[in-house]
Image 1: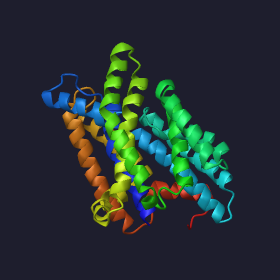
Image 2: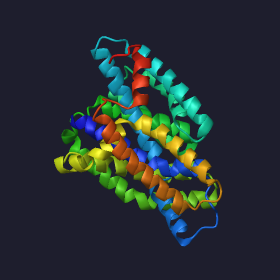
Image 3: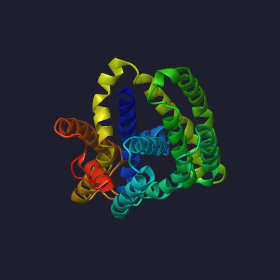
Image 4: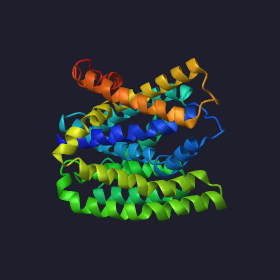
Amino acid sequence: MKRMITLDVLRGFALLGIIFINIEQMVYVNRDYSPIDLLLSNVSNMAIIHRFFVIFSFLFGVGFYIFTSRAKAKGHRPIKLFVRRLLILLIFGAIHHIFQPGESLLVYAIIGFLLLPFHRATPRVVLSFGLVFTLAGCWLGFPVLVLGMFLLGHWSGQIGLFEDPEHYRRGVRRIQVISLVLIFPMYFVQELILNETGYVDVALAVGGLPVSVFYVTTIILLIQRSSAQRLLTPLANMGRMALTNYLLQTVIILTIAHSLNWFGTVHRSTLYLMAVIILMGQMIGSTLWLRHFKMGPVEYIWRVGTYWRVKL
């Protein structure tokens, strides 16, 4: 039970950050910055941009392990089902890409096929390749970094990190402290790379990785407290419906932006306020939905398409 709560909270937390990135990709902000807009831009550069897709990528890898191991335990052919799952995600991503070109589902579905050779690999092999691709991705760009995080997520599932987090508490704590110490030095390196080379993806990957690791390790440690679990329940509910909420965010943002003719005229502060309101609504809506259903509507379609069974 704790394992699922931890993963759901992480998914919900990732949704908290990703909306602030996507909303600026969909609705161009007014470049006449107010002091508040400038402050929000600086905070975003430090704590949000290129920080949350890494978490989603890691969780995708965890999901790969959980899905294939459970499918195998039930007597299914896990790779066949996972390929079908990726193809359905590819369709979701292709449709979503029409409305939100910066979306990640399409990329995840494509790169997800590269996980298949690692299905039977040992944890040591998966970890080694995961670290290599992650470090290489800091210099080679987004797709390589995504694959690295996929593999590290798969590895964490193999070793049972989310099944027995207490067993790994000391190791997680060490990684948390190291990542915290690295945040500001690596942010300095990020700005140095931006100013000296203009390589945006490289700079953001270098500066963002320690922040992402700090977020994940902090939540893993925090969620082991029962009081934190109760407090973060609305976030976990939103995470249980992560795919539905991710797609729904695009629908809401574009509907409001078109209705109010916000493109290129709205200030960042207004966009961020709208993002906060959307997130609050999704926490409430997800909680109410899950009182009556086991999963979100898009998750249900995804599951039915994977298993070819309506009753699950």
